[in-house]
Length: 104
Figure: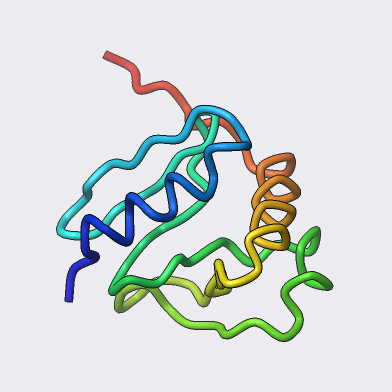
């Protein structure tokens, strides 16, 4: 099941205080960027974020799952507590690399 456009708009609006937010549709699902770093993979109306040690304590009670078959297990970010969600994304953003530019 693909993500609804309402779900993607909700996430983008929730992340707006962190800076420039954009989404990109990829094979029926979405990736969401904050300030040009990919922070969320959205599948089946769930927001998946990479499991990194920097957010393990904050996400200790979070659900986990795989966004698609063959993917690594990820945390499912719950936006019910928007302040916590913003803190998690902000911390994660600091530890994620910028995408590598493609050679032409």
